[in-house]
Amino acid sequence: MEIKITKTDRSRLDQVDFNDLPFGQISSDHMFVMEYDGTAWRDARIEPLHSFEIHPSNLALHYGQSIFEGMKASKNQDGVALLFRPELHAERLNASAERMCMPSIDPSNFVEAVSALVQMEQNWIPPEEGSSLYIRPFMYAIDHFLGVRPSITYRFCIITLPVGPYYAKPVNLLASDTYVRAIPGGVGEAKTSGNYAASLYPRKLAMEQGFDQVLWLDGHEFKYVQEVGTMNLFFVFEDEIATPANNGAILKGITRFSFIQILRERGCRVTERPIAIDEVFEAHAQGTLKEVFGAGTAAVASTVGLIAHKDRKIELDTSLTPIAQMLKTEINGLRSGKVRDSRGWTVPVYTPVVA
Ligand code: COI
Image (cartoon, rainbow, N blue to C red; front, side, top):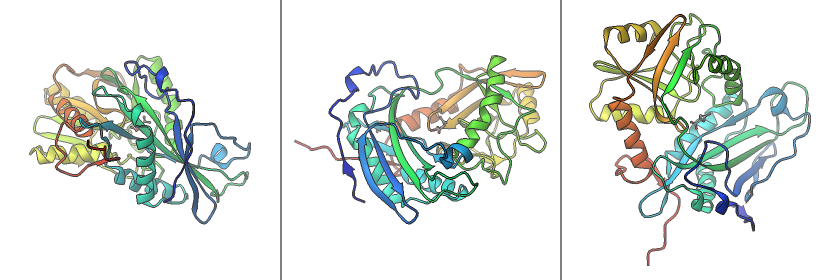
């Protein structure tokens, strides 16, 4: 793919404090953009970050045809920027695109676009362990038309943002017995904006009661755990590490897949199965619930400190979370090159000149 490059002559890099990186607030200097004209992706380019004009009848604004991915880049000890399993992100973007009637992107073009942008923004990669350059590829409809139909034209962009941890402390969850994120047959498996929009009001109510996030239960019986919206969930029972099975309503997390593989390679019994919220409370009462943590690109492995459901709650000891800690160390180590990548999960984006 040919990528036309226009560099900014006014970098904002010197205004950034790498020791203070609230998630999602600071964007790097450049962005990748290309448009789909109904037949092919065209005009691939990297240019200084800028706003877009949006027509008032834009289809994405009215009917939500919009999808995204979340990835991260870090530097290894030799200063080489590494991507983590970018081909899986390309695959998931295309699965989301298919569900939302949007065009696919050749996975090698996707990886090339991400690599080219990260290579250009490599000085924006924070050096601190646990911080990274968050990469947000996204696609949205650009037709202006008020009838409900798929757009013919689309824009695909990638922006990057230096970030610290998404959750700086253990997360407190309220399991909702009123609101639903997704049901099988809906769009819960797609990484599409509407899933996140649907979560805002229940989360606002949860935050008013002192919780950080909503723990989503299945929409039929409000019985089985799904996910948190910003992360998949893992439950460490005495002799089993369980995570809700993908059932069409749960995001197919790439960190989730990676954790399952790492745990199985270490001999842990990992199950993907329905997990009833009652089972979680019972296990806690019996002392067999050892850890609960979330898995996600932004969240990495974030420990859960409290789960409330109806009139009951459990508090978890977050001072002792060996499984979550091991996974976090492994993933962050792979990203920073401190852990040897025997599985070929990391992809270097450039080769430094060796003197
Ligand atoms: C990610 O982990 O990258 C996500 O996309 C979740 C989020 C909305 C921050």
